[in-house]
Image 1 (tube, rainbow, N blue to C red):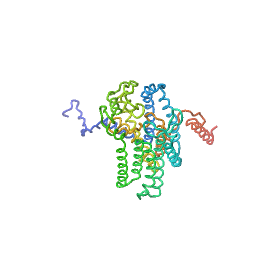
Image 2: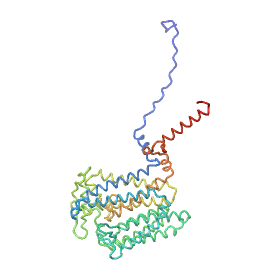
Image 3: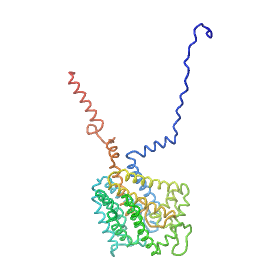
Image 4: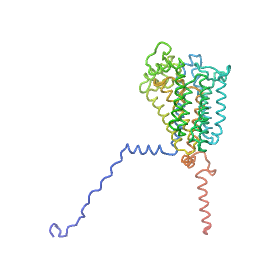
Length: 451
């Protein structure tokens, strides 16, 4: 046959079809986004963010308190670690409170709402009694406990308002009363104004702003109408303007927004300007831990209200952004807990705690950056002050308890078994199961006639 040298017919080859298109490789950015989305959507994400983020803030705060307070302690003829030891003791006590709050059931938290509120009001009233209350930096908001220990009852008023307000709004929602504006406002707003009045008697407007933010957060979560929300906000704004206009000190603080050089007169803006100097000299990675210059007497309240400025000077932009990222993660986790729960008390309490921590962080950091007036509030979990640290750590315990109480998180925690600490034959996952399996096999063999 033609075309074949061996005389055999040529092999008929099958016609090739069109080549199958090759699957394009997945975009690395899209793959990273998918994995990150799955990680963020896991049941225990909020639990780990709250626990890990708060602990990191506390540990970093202890380090910065030790660094920023050494010079102040030496100037007061005290040991260099004086303020650090007090803060570390408060952190240990707060750790116990955090653990207790994280293990308490929701019913017990609701039962504690009224006693904590009554105790906070009583202690805030004691501040105004001569001989019991004491003034610090012009504010009559402290009670001396003897020696160098003091307590600020208004800090516990924040926790009281969160728990009591959440319990109140949850009971009203269960009775379907929140559709009426009078039930939404009464008695929440009058009790909040009572707390605000007791605080303003001492002149602490910064704490009053935080309580007002908590009130608005609870009202927003309760679904307050826009007109009602705007009305309460307008009343609070008018009262705030009156309180600022009638106080030369508050007007001086308002005049220091955006100041870059010290001035002469009542509003010298010394603290605000040197806070900016500290941040500006930090650079990208800072001058090194303990190498701050502004804490050598130039920056007032370096270990309390302006500890963020010392952090920027010693740890640089990287350190300040790390602190901001930790607070952002904590806020995201709190919002997630409040948004995914079906329990109204958990929703209001988690939202109130998240509003409290984020609003206080924004006010403190905004004042250090020169964007807001100096309100005299500490950076939550970070600044020096046991009175602020203890209720805040209890509130973090609340968020941890709520995050653990989610149905998906509860199921994920129940599926986990401890890897260490169990003896064989005493309830361990391997010993009893293997022994029971061997017993079943042996009994099956005997029943089949084998010996």
